[in-house]
Image 1 (cartoon, one colour):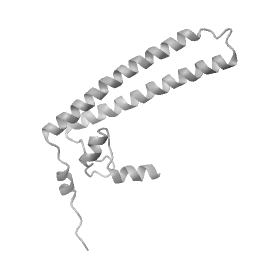
Image 2 (cartoon, rainbow, N blue to C red; image 1 turned 90 degrees about the vertical axis):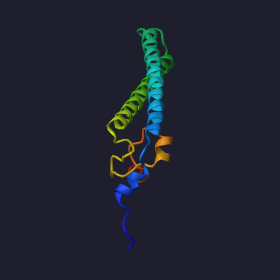
Image 3 (cartoon, rainbow, N blue to C red; image 1 turned 45 degrees about the vertical axis):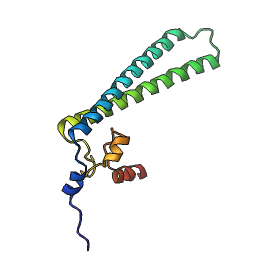
Image 4 (tube, helix red, strand yellow; image 1 turned 120 degrees about the vertical axis):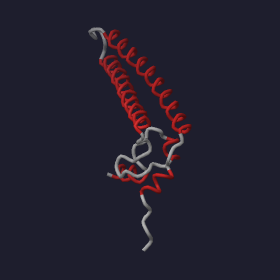
Length: 134
């Protein structure tokens, strides 16, 4: 039987340098700022849609449906931006507390390539695949 790889050796291969972490942190902070702007714009659009809708008097069914669809779409975009901002905040906190790059499910290392492609990742590839199959 081959010996199992120790968790410490796989974790060691995923050690981030201070320069790498600073680059990821900067990228996450820039993404957070972009999301804040997107959220502010979307919330402004929602407020405009609500104020434009008035009491709906004189609208035919199609107009009313269209306005409702637009509001719901904008609200969905706002919710998505808030979710992404939460993920970014979580990733930044993990960088600060030293747990960035550690899978929340199995405790193993998340490979750098995955985190470079998706810096908000909280699961290793194997655990993410298992989650998606469920």
